[in-house]
Amino acid sequence: MTGQPTLITSVQRALRLLDAVGSSDRRPTAKALARLTGEKLPTTYHLLRTLVHEGYLRRVDGGYALGDRVSALSARLLDRPLRQRVRPALSDLHEMLHAAAYLVLYRDGELELVDVVDSPSAPRVDLWVGLAASGHATALGKAVLSALDEDGRRDYLARHELADLTPYTLTDRRALLRRLPERGGPGGGAPVVVDRQEYSLGIACVATPLRVVRAGGEEAVAAVAISVDAPRLDGARRRGGDLARAARRLALELAT
Image (cartoon, rainbow, N blue to C red):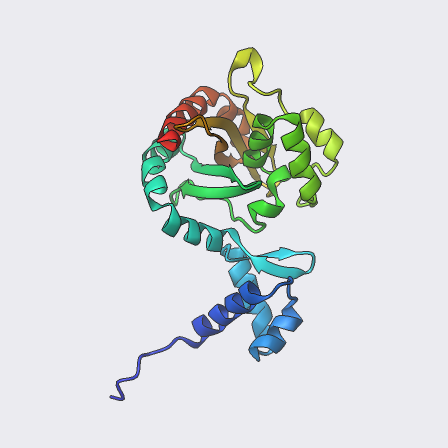
């Protein structure tokens, strides 16, 4: 016995890649990361593919950036009380609709994933492209845009490239703005926004925005969504009332 801990080399290599991406002021390519970490290029590709699949990295313009899982880990440390408050409502929504349930906040001009509740029978969507680069293709992102005023919408779209993620992704800014529902929705209710395989083939999402009014009158925008297999989209849309009730409940939790 040497007293030395047992170390898993592949885990060490993956963590070094995360460190290299996180410390870079650019979006390093696989070849650049192989040089930085001293790994062979085939090994680097395998590790990067795994980290992207698990959401710790994302591909952007041929390079790599930190993914939503890293942001979510940081957010969990900073916002643990917030996650504890919203988890019951998301869990109830998940169980009621038999679908993965998501909550995002619009903070500092970006979509921030707060929490996801899923299960083996209703798994979450593989976030292969982070929300920072895919808001236009997700029901969550479009729900947030629907709650912003005209200036807020145009500001967001001016700062984000509309990447073509699937054959169904809308990449024309004017067309996207035209398809967003009016603020407040029909009859003053919250609009229901859908993603028809625009983010991931075979997956559809339904979302609704929520406006949060905190003490002192400060306002924030958020959105709650569920994801289902594409053939279940019509049924999920018919549960818009359940989604709206969850949104109202979450708005109260976020306001505290």
